[in-house]
Image 1 (cartoon, one colour):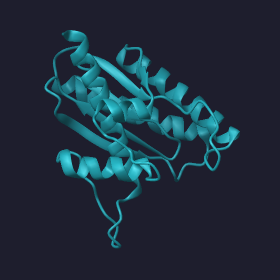
Image 2 (image 1 turned 135 degrees about the vertical axis):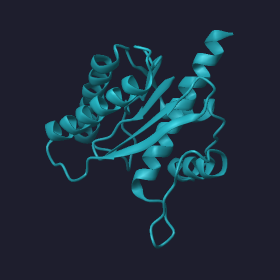
Image 3 (image 1 turned 30 degrees about the horizontal axis):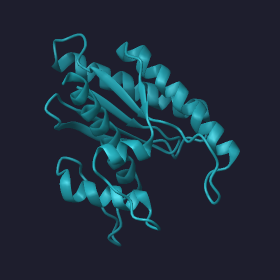
Length: 182
């Protein structure tokens, strides 16, 4: 089983994919109401603790999760995108969540860049189009086990982008594991 995470200080997406590539769990953990970096980390820790309890109570194997994949945090500036402060905060938070995953599941997470994960999943982003829109449309069209909810205006709810992104990370990790088995 593969655990994939799209880590963010606003909403963190999580997906678990089984050995056959099917979605077992896909959800988003909303952190927007928490202002403190450390409170956000506490919430993630509690969510991971609950996830671990669910996993170990339903599956009798001690190591149900075989690998953990986390979206690599941005490494450089791009005009019109995140500031140095935001990149630093996201990188720190990614590190904290990575440690929590290691602590709870006993596995060192592997990191996949979003562009590499999308490419591995067969998702191509046309020039001038926002990647998040393309990813969510791909998930709507191809992954029925990821529930996409909409606002009353017909737009995907914010957490759905994170759920879709976590699916891409988990699926890319699963595909990587499959290629290593061959």
